[in-house]
Amino acid sequence: MEQLVFLGTGDAMGVPRVYCGCAICEEARKGGVNRRYRSLVAVEGERVDENQGNPFPFGEEEGFLIDCGPDWRSAMERREQRFAGQVLVTHAHFDHIGGLPEWADACRWLDRKGQLYAPQEVLDTILRQYPWLDRNLDLHTVDQGVTLAGWSIRGWKVNHGKNGYSYAYRLEKDGFVWAYCSDSIALPPEQRGLLAELDLLVLGTSFYHETAEFSTRSVYDVKEALELLQEIKPKRTIFTHMSHDIDLRRDYGLPEGVEYARTGQTVLLR
Image (tube, rainbow, N blue to C red; front, top):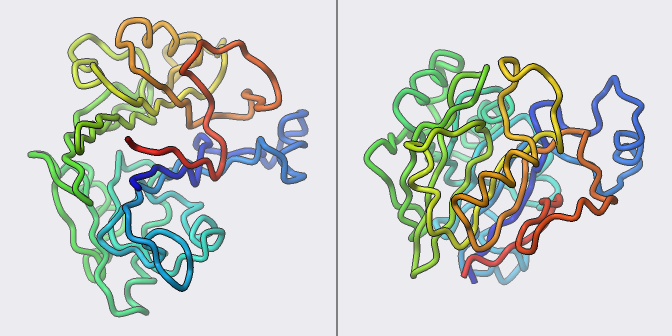
């Protein structure tokens, strides 16, 4: 079966914050439900490895990852996965690409080429930061769309507030349509078009209600996201990219069909 696995559901700093002693961070330090790694998801295909029992545990063509942040290695260890074959990147911020050198190093030692997919301008930025990556990774532009694991994927630039821009992706396969939009805020009408008629929306929401000056912000808060959902009306929505403001032990009274992602959560894509 096709499924989405949330390996990382946190914002740029993750939870707990190293400096913070709030109740949410303390609960997370004890291995609680609020322990959140930097944003990372796996899109998994149907083949199951007979030895491991995990879908494509060694990164075969049946699946791919979205983003490769600094918690990529720990996510791989938690899954007992030794190789990732394909990674689709949303934008070139550290919390989304900080694991690329470790991935490239794994490819070097295993004598395998990883396949990195991103818009051309994102690839250009990545290579300026890590100019040696193309020794072990094949780089592919997705500006004209791409097909991964049978999913037809279209990306488009979205407003990332004070942090510039990110890319969101719309994925379609066998009549199921979903979108991944981890880093965005105040999307203008022209950036919402591909968010229409979705079976599933994965949307970044850092705070429940963020009180910082709007010009300093970069990701929707939950209240703003709920207003967006009233316009685009996805069948199901999962909030990710959460800071230490979100407490998964609390009932926020979210509408039906809307929920917070949990580390390790698996969602069927059908």
